[in-house]
Length: 170
Ligand code: AR6
Image (cartoon, rainbow, N blue to C red):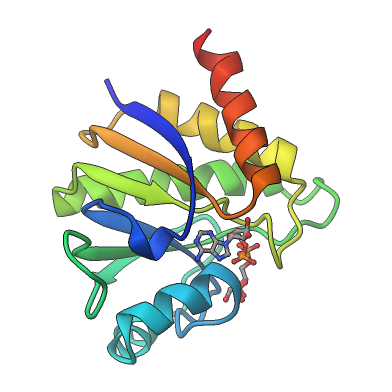
C-alpha cells in the first residue's frame, strides 16, 4: 500500500526517483513549477520533451531528469486541465493526471514519486478541490510506487493537502 506524505518545498530538491511536472502540451517548458524543473534539469529537458509533444490534458510521459540532482532519475510530464468553471471535464482530467503519472512511474520502476499541486497555479483550478482530487486519486490508484510525496510550494496549498489527507486517513 502506498504511503502518502504532504510536504512543503521546492520539488526540484526532492529525494525521490521521479518528480512530476505540471507541464503544458508543448513539453518545452513554461513558468511556475515547469520553469523551475526546466531550469534545474537543463536545456536537454526541453529537447527531450519536445520530441514527445504534444501531450494532451490528463496524459503523462517521461523523460530523463538530466541535470537534476540524484536520486531523481526521471521527470514525468503531465498536462493538467485549464479551469473553465468545472463543466468541461476538469475533475476527471485532473484525476487522470495523477493516475497516468503513477502508471508511467510503474513502467519506469520508480518507487518514490513527488507531485506538485497540478493545475492550481496558472491553470486556475480551485486549490481546495484540487487537493481532494490529488489525495483521493493517489490513495485509490493501484500502483507499485511505495512513497508518494505531495509537494506544496506555498503555505495555503500545504494546509489544503494536509486537511485532505487527514480527512481520508483518520
Ligand atoms: N516546486 C513545487 N511546486 C511549485 C514550484 C516548485 N519549484 N513552483 C511553483 N509551484 P503552475 P499549472 C506550485 O502554475 O497551474 C506553466 O507555465 C505552484 O505554487 O506551475 O498546472 C506550464 O508551462 C502551484 O501550487 O502549474 C503550463 O503552461 C503549482 O506548483 C502552466 O504553467 C502549480 O502551478 C501549468 O499550470
